[in-house]
Amino acid sequence: MDYLALQETEPIRRDDDLGVWIVTGFEQVRKLLRNPALSSAWPENGTTHLHDQQESRDGVRRTSDIVRRWFMFNDAPRHQRLRGLIAPLFSTSRLAELQPFVEESVDQLLHGVAGQIDVMLDLAVPLASRVVCRQIGLPPEVAPRIAAWASEIDALLVADYLPEVVERGTRALEEIEQAVATARAGSEVPAGSALEILSHAFGTGLIEELDIAATASLLIFAGFDTTSTFIGKAVRALMHTEQWSAAASERITSLVEELLRFDTSVQQVARIAVEPVEIEGHRIERGELVLMMLGVANRDTDAFTNSDVLDPGRQSSRHLAFGYGAHYCLGAGLARMEVSAALNGLVKRFSHAELAEPPVLRPHNGVTVLEHLRLSIRN
Ligand code: HEM
Image 1 (spheres, rainbow, N blue to C red):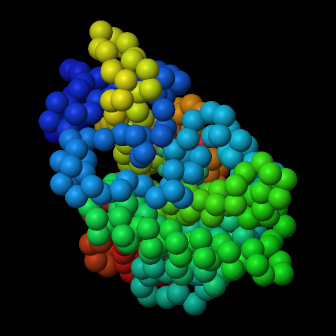
Image 2 (cartoon, rainbow, N blue to C red; image 1 turned 90 degrees about the vertical axis):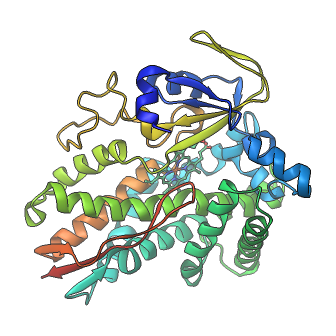
C-alpha cells in the first residue's frame, strides 16, 4: 500500500483486508494519540484477521505475562505508576551524569580502530547495549546478550501468531528474568539504577516482583534496536549530507533531529479502541485496532514544508519519531545523546569515511534493524 498517497486522500482509513484502521495524517495521529478511548493494551486485546485465522486453528496463546506488564502496553493508572518510578533515570540531571560514561564508551570502542569499521558491530551495538545495561543496573558482562534478546522480543511483538516466534521470544524474556534475578541476588545493585528503584518499590508493596523483570525487558526492547540502528542511519546520513571532516557538533545535532523525522525508525504504534471514537466522519468501533503511521505522518506536507527532503537546516523537533502524548518516549534525550556522542566520536577521530560494502539490513521486524555498516576510514 502506498501510505504517502493515502495521506493525501484518506489520512484515516479502515483497511478491510486486515481489519485495522490506518492513520497517516500528522494532526490526526496527534489527535488520536491524545484520546483516552484509545488504549495501549493492544498486544493483549488487539487482533487482526491474521490472528483470527491462526488462533482458531492452533489456539496459540498471545503475549507472555511479562509483556502484558510493560507500562508501554498499559493505560492509567498503572502506566503512570510504573513510568513515574523510572522516569528519574531519564531526567536532565541524570543524563548529564551519564554523558561522560557514554562519551568514554565511544572512545574505548573506537580506540585502535583503523582502516575499516563496522559501525554496527564495533560501535552502535556495543554502545547501546552498555547504556541500556547501565540504566537497568545489569552488569556489563550481560551487554553482549542484549542484541539477541531484543531481536527475539521484536519478532514476538510483530508476529505473535507464529508459534515458533512465540517460543523464542518467551525464552528470551525468561533469560532476562534470570539475569535480573542474578543481579538482584548479588551484593551490589547499582545505586540509582532501574533495578534499585524497582526493588525498593516492590519492597514497599507498590509493585509486584515480576514488574521488575518486566520493566527491564521493556527497556531492552524499547531502548536497544531503536538506538543502535539509528546510530548507523545517522552515520550514513552524515556521509551523504555533510563534509565528514567539517561536521561540527551543532550541525550533527540538527542533522540527527531532522533524520529522526525523515527516516523515522518506529514506523507505527498501535492502539485499541476501548470506546467508539468519532473522528472526521469515521467511527472507530470498540475493540478495533488503530495503527498510527508515525513515519508517514512525519512526511505530512501540511506539517512540514518539502517534507520529502532531508534538510538538516530545518531545526524542528515537532516530529513524531518518539511518539506523542502520555507514552512519549522516555529515552528520547538519552537516544539523542548516544547518537550525537557516536557521530562526534567518529568525526573527531577519522578525517574521511566511505562505504566499504552495502549496508546489511534485517528486514521483517517492527523496527528495520541495521546489522552491518562497513566503512573504509582514514585517520
Ligand atoms: C532513536 C531511538 C528511539 C526511538 C526512535 C524511540 C521511539 C519510541 C516511540 C515511538 C515510543 C512511543 C510508543 C507508543 O506510543 O506506543 C517510545 C516509547 C518508549 N521508549 Fe523509546 N525510542 C528510542 C530510544 C529509547 C531509549 C534509548 C529508551 C530507554 C533506554 C527508550 C525507552 C522507551 C520507553 C520506556 C517507552 C515507553 C513509554 C511509555 O509507554 O510511557 N526509547 N519510544
